[in-house]
Length: 217
View 1 (cartoon, rainbow, N blue to C red):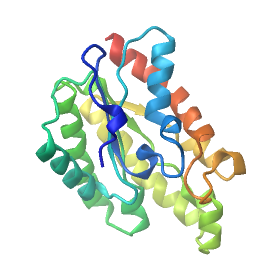
View 2: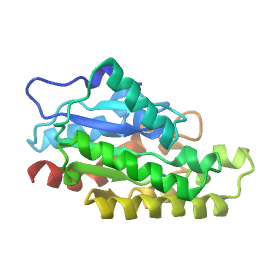
View 3: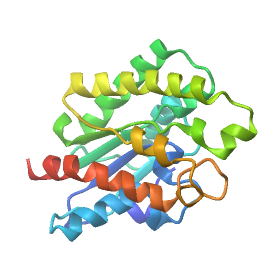
View 4: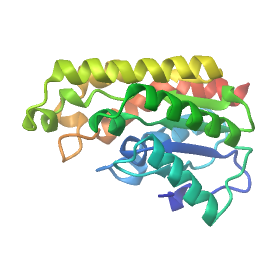
């Protein structure tokens, strides 16, 4: 649930990453996760940031992430002064055929929670797009219609983008690169579904300008 490598540092500003398999990095080594890669890029620019504290589990929907945050809080209260927070969730809502209206309400509530953990400042929060898993070999093996998956993912991402704008958070559109390159063998983990560290590196590079702005005020 919570990444032990992402414990709070006594000196570096804290980074909280909330999500599902795409944040925990299913199928990649811990140093290949996109929040870890983003933190490394920031430090390479001389911007202080701690190792990310990750609350994410493969398969989580929005309500399950909410419960996972509660469980983490019960173990050890999460500080409300993170310098940076991120939110990437929703693919499992889409995969399970959950309603878009339900997703909007739950996503907006999660964004409020992420903002609260970032000192109440939405400008410190990054919202990343859900990748289009319909381009992957996994989807093909399941006989999924890639056009239908793409349309549904676009609908979920529209909600994420709208809610991020409404809250004043940063929207990081990783969907285009995921759709364009997400079917390439080198961009996939061994399961043929989840991104590889190479894809996560592209996400981290796309998130860097927003993270830089969030941390430098």
